[in-house]
Image 1 (cartoon, rainbow, N blue to C red):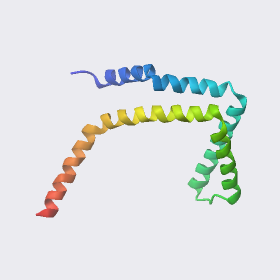
Image 2: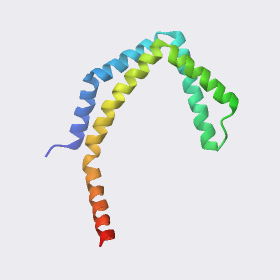
Image 3: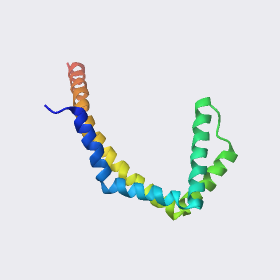
Image 4: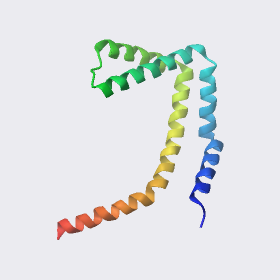
Length: 124
């Protein structure tokens, strides 16, 4: 029987060899090397954090916040470096979702058996 942690370590190495991962690394480097794109990205992250903080405190998002978010969204969409980064993130995320489905499969089967048993009791 193999050690599950060996499998995890191998999966990590395999991910680093995937084209989607390498493409993301290259897109991040391109972002770091483009000051305008980096500034927009940094502004976006700050706005994201601000929104999350307000949500945690139960504060409303103001019209000014929404206006800033819309303006920033337009900047993001119009910047080729950031658009490329977002495309690469989506591609890698698809891979991670597929991996997660595979890893979660056995666990989902266990809970599915509970759901099936519960359905059997309600029909009786």
